[in-house]
Image (cartoon, each protein chain N blue to C red):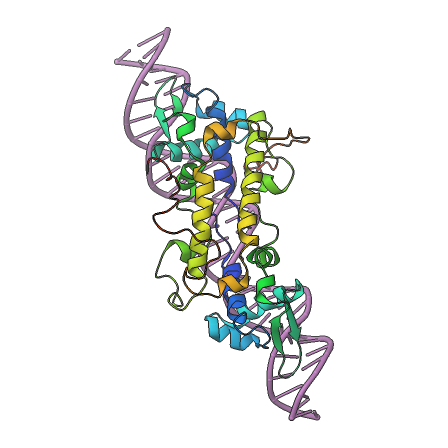
Amino acid sequence: MFRLSRLTDYGTVIMAHMAREPGRVYSAAELAGAVGVAAPTASKILKTLARKALLHSLRGAHGGYLLARPPREISIAQVIDALEGPLGVTECSVAAGLCPQENACAVRSHWQRIDWALRQTLAGLTLEDMMQPGSAGMPDRRRPGHDRPRSDGPG
Amino acid sequence: MFRLSRLTDYGTVIMAHMAREPGRVYSAAELAGAVGVAAPTASKILKTLARKALLHSLRGAHGGYLLARPPREISIAQVIDALEGPLGVTECSVAAGLCPQENACAVRSHWQRIDWALRQTLAGLTLEDMMQPGSAGMPDRRRPGHDRPRSDGPG
DNA sequence: TTTATATAGAATCAATTTAGTCCTATATGT
DNA sequence: ACATATAGGACTAAATTGATTCTATATAAA
């Protein structure tokens, strides 16, 4: 599937929601309601994000969570790292080689390049970007009709 | 983990191996040995790739598989599509209508854009590229997947 | 024609991963 | 003291994945 886990997906939505009022304290229950996930699930995600220092937490009555930094200083790459560990397209692109053959080694270096490109994309996208609806406010968007990339093959 | 499945990983290695002699017919058993995966596993991957028309298959004695097109005309994006379906970073970025929050969700369009960028990267990388050693030789190697033998035998 | 080889495809089984929930401890405002 | 809220871990259930097995079919060669 090549997918993020659903918890990570929720996490980005929660973070984007919080980014709309950066200084505010949100309780787990409130955020669960706002983004439409079950309370224990939201709570689990928030605990992880707090442990990874992307959120600050306040315990006790009227406690909750708030962004540890301004939205423009929190990247999607950081959120993904917090919720599912170092990103990598294949196991061997992260850990030591799995392939006994020369050509397999060649494959590995290409995966690593892909990882790098992907990381660049995700590291350049911040919560500030993510909280804007649609594609209107995208930092480096391409306009339709200009600069069309080559298509994906025989399709 | 944001990873390709291991079968897809094997698939790319198998395809890269086959790309070294594009016109040649390889049996499943031979390829299994060459890349170091169990024969039934290689077979399963090859069947799928053949069904998706990235390989041609020849049945019967001295049968096997060969690339359906020259290596430079087969992209990694195509291999991934064949082995794990349409790539997409999140569920909602691929299929509409799964998430009740869809209309209100600010992040969806951003995921779609990331999908697009990733696809461009993978569509631009062909088997011809993959079979060239990229940069570094690899210091250590290990056998893929099957260092954990399953005992299904007596007992 | 028979036999050995090899893929097609479905079904199955086991292991792992993920999602979701629950419980107890601790901190804080009223 | 009490109500509220997070911390952290343990636990269960479900989905996904990896790997195997079985039957059918096609082909080359004896």
